[in-house]
Image (cartoon, rainbow, N blue to C red; front, side):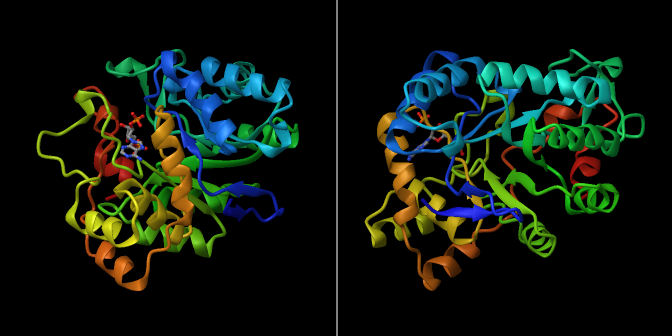
Length: 317
Ligand code: A2P
């Protein structure tokens, strides 16, 4: 399995299993199946509201001796309602208990957006906390303390613009080692990739297949689809691969971690085999031309008439 190295030489499997949108009824079997097939990297978050079910599959695999915990890479994320310094460790402890492990390989700040404690999705003014009142660096200091205590091996962020990542790098004692961002041929993120490369930060691509199973409220009527794009279909036909494998192979070729979500055994297997797809320069050039700066997950659910957050401020665009 292709893997990417952190500066302490820990290796992260480049293709992981996404669990956003995996229902509680399906995710335990999907994770169990994935581990049997050879997946060794599971991307989780408490806001996906399925960590206990993911944890059951992990515990079963580890307790039965099928997979050693040390051979597994577990990532989870701090939700927006736990940015207050005193909330960080309890949130992490909850995730550790749910995932049935005593450490995470990677812990990420999920969004550069803060909610009041206990609020899952903020709507009203009092449910939001502006970043000016809850600076990222104060949350980060507790993340750093969790590394020192051995509760997490690596720390990073998600959905951070280059400006926010740069600011955090300047203030941090332990610099972020990962930025998990939406990334696919319609949103190629060249500036973010350049910044991260220069600063020794790995990048994970979320929604690598376009997240077609997002809730309707997060979808636009006229949004483009990736899996049936003619350029992708053409590359798939050329390599005897599926469109999903081309999208994942493209992400891996650009040295990004990819975390496709599936709860279907056939598609889990197909996605894992994407590491074998070798795109050539012609394919890469054709796919490069598809960039249109299009976000499927545009952060609009964090904005609204009573929110202090705007999309311009979230993305610094
Ligand atoms: P399913 O879970 O039924 O397989 P993303 O990873 O970008 O969030 O995309 C996830 C969506 O893509 C889900 O709807 C998932 O459905 C679907 N999917 C996952 N793998 C494949 C594949 N190999 N081919 C087509 N669709 C896929």
